[in-house]
Every structure is written in C-alpha cells, then in structure tokens.
Amino acid sequence: MATDWLGSIVSISCGDSLGVYQGRVSAVDQASQTISLTRPFHNGVKCLVPEVTFRAGDITELKILEIPGLGDNGQCGDFQHTDLGIPNLEGPGGTSQNGTGKLLKKPSSAPQNIPRRTDVKIQDVAISPQQHPCSKSYMDRHMESLNQSKNFRRRHNSWSSSSRHPNQVTPKKSGVKNGQLKNKDDECFGDDIEEIPDTDFDFEGNLALFDKAAVFEEIETYERKSGTRSRGTPSEKAARYRHDENILESEPIVYRRITVPQPSKEFCTDSGLVVPSVSYELHKKLLSVAEKHGLTLERRLEMTGVCSSQMALSLLGGPNRLNPKNIHQRPTVALLCGPHVKGAQGISCGRHLSNHEVDVILFLPNFVKMLESITNELTLFSKTQGQQVSSIKDLPDTPVDLVINCLDCHENAFLRDQPWYKAAVDWANQNRAPVLSLDPPVNEMEQGIDAKWSLALGLPLPLSERAGRLYLCDIGIPQKVFQEVGINYHSPFGCKFVIPLHST
Image (tube, rainbow, N blue to C red; front, top):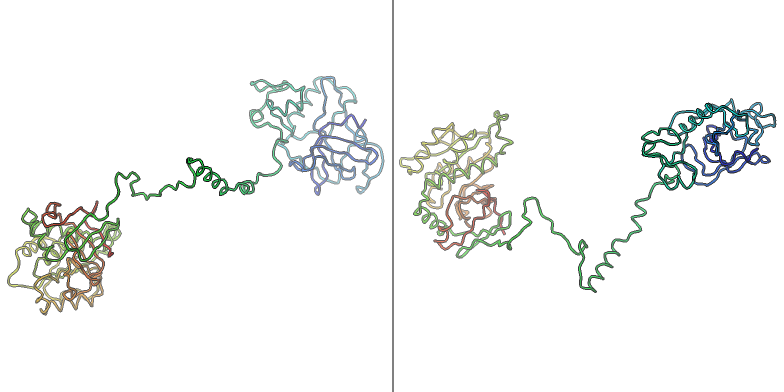
C-alpha cells in the first residue's frame, strides 16, 4: 500500500521549530516509521541536500499536493496515514503510540501556511488511487483545485519540463493547458522553481579570478613581437580635456606671441601666454603714435574708465553685491585724484561707477588752472549722483569698500611734497580699505600708497611687488600701431578686456 504513494508531491509540517517541507515521496519505511522526500524545499527555499527523511513523531500535518498518474479513471477517498504504511503515533500529550488510523494531524499544533505563489489552501483530504470511485465531475473539480494550488510551476516550452513529463501536452499560444486557461503571469513566469539558483552569484569572487594586469601584459608582449597594436589597450592613454578646451588642435600653441625690444620683466596670463613689460619711454611713445592714428586722449580716457570701473565692480562683489534686492547695502568707493591725466582717468572711472548705483566720493583739490581733459570729465561727473570734495576732512571717517588711487603720476614728482597729497596718503593708509591703483609709476619711491591691485594700460610696466597683484587693461590700441614702434603684438585678452597677470 505504501508503494502506491511513491512519486507523489506532499507537504509536511513539522511544527514551528522545524517548519514546512515540500517534495516528492521517494521512500516509505514502515518498520522505522519514516518517510523520505527527494528534491525537498524548506519553507519555500530549495534545500542543499538532495533528500531528507522524517520520523512519524516529528510530523504534525501531511498534505498531498500532487498524485502521479491520476487520470479520468482514478479513484478518490479519504486519506488516512495508514495508507502510507505509517500508523498513528499520536497519543495523549503528543506521545507516540500504535493505534488505529486517522488523519495525521496534531490538534495541539496550530496549522502553518505553506509558502507558495497562491493563497488557495487545499483540503486536508487526499486522493487515494485505490479508494472508492468518484464521479467524473467531482474528479474534474478536484483536479482544478490541485492545479490552482500547485507550487511547482513549469514553463510549457522548456526542455526540462518536457523531458521530465513526456505525457504533458504542450499548450498553444492561446494559453490552454490541459483544458484550462492559464494566467498571463503563469505563461511568462511559470518556470520550474527548481531552476532557481540555490545561492547568489558571487560577482566579487568571480572578478578576482581575472588578472587584468597579466592579460594586458600578455597583449603588449604580443604586440611588441608582432609589431601591431590593438585598439583599447592601456598603452593608449587618452588625453583629458577640460570643458573649455578645444579637442581639435590645428597647430601647436605658441605661448610667446608678444616680443618687445629690450624686455626687462615678463608676466604670463591664466592661459600661459607670455606678456613682456615695456619701459615707460616705449609706453609713452606707443600712446603718442596711437594718438596720431586717431586714438585720442578722450578715447583712451573712456576706455580706461570703462575697464577700471568693470574691474572695481568685480572687486566690490559683482552681481552678489549689486542687485535690486540689496540696495540697502550699496558699496562706497573713494576716488583720490590729482591734477593730471591719471586724475582724469579716475574721474572717468567714478562716473561709470556712479552710473551703476555705487556711492562715489571724488577727492580733487582746488586748482586755479586744470587740464582740459579734467574739466570735461568733471562736467560729466557732475551729472551723476556722485559726490565731489576738495578737502580731506570731507572724506568718510569710517572705512569704505574700495579706494581707487589716482594721485601718483609718472611725471611731476614734486606733487608728493604738497600738503594735500600727504593728507590724502595718510587718510588712505589709515582707512584700512583695499586700494586699487590706476597705472602706477615704475619707481616704488613714487608710490605713496601701498596697493592691493594695480591696473596697467595696453602693456605692463616693470612694476615692483609694492604694486600688488597686477591686471592688464585693453585700451583699444590697434595691432599695426604696436608694429610701428617695434612691438610684435598678438592680443592676449581673448574674450575679456581686463585679465590678470602673474610674475614668472
């Protein structure tokens, strides 16, 4: 009788401590009161061992999930554990004893749900092929219930399914299997659960088996011997480019594009271009030739005022400081100007700063006779909201945001002995505000105020460290004007009008 159940798929519950096992019955031993399952699953996970054996005393509940060879002529009946050849071992208190057959289920242990894809729970009764015959309709209904609750699903077009079950009918694309309509999920994902790997794939361990350095060394050795080179090897180190670099270079870069007669000091830009300095005599000659070609003093004053004000706006904070939402913290700039061309440059710079909502205080002492350029710039400055003072006492006592120094001049060094000059220098040194010098003189003895930044015009002069960090301003001198005074010139400015210079 026990051999009739070999090959059946059963579910065995062993209580909360051991859990639930499913598998195919491979052996039933009546003498030792044991049952063995092949290809077992423990709580829905495939076991690592091919077969497990259970004692009758450990089993609290046994359910038949599938009976092999049950067809239309099959018989059904109430299943009793004596049909498997295992007598009742349950007595009072759960102790094992011999007795008459009844359902193999311990009432003291709560039933445990079998982990499977569906929640349909089959009845505790099982089908015995040698019990009383049942009607055809009841058999069909019971087989439908078994198929719905089946935990081992098979893919109809897989080789493993057809090889293990040769009598199974291969369904068509319509989804009909054994006379039943299959769910779409079952058609797509209804593979045997036995094909799922037991353990996760060890990616790190598998990658450690590959010795990349040895493989590349072997490739390079082969290339050296054969004289060939393959694509994508580590010997080809692709160049890395920044977002602002051009990857297509038509010709080599020439960094020394400006040459001057008798250079004394050299600077370089952020991109590496070399900018040599010129003497004051050559710089003065360059401006004189440019004026003959139409670059008048008024044009140079306007360009200097625009570029210096643009640099001053950047030093004051740029868009973070000058925006409509921050009008209650408008920056204050003090302009110290003298009665010369450099003073006119400072007045032009103050006019542009005032047009950009900067509080400008212009210091210019009263003189009986002034240059025409200064008079014209003062007339334009008076149309702005800037403030003009002629006494040091009218300058602010508190520190300002920026001081622009236009007191020092390349010529007329006697101005440094004037009382107003000394008073302005003392005020600037005591105000503790950063200083920007416009076109400072070469001789550091002529610089009364230590500057943090200095702005050179056209080409830099050989300034000392006292001038601070040097910037270069483009005042619009054409290239042929440079060539006329013996300077081979190519613009280093690029897309800007003011660039920083670094000492080499």
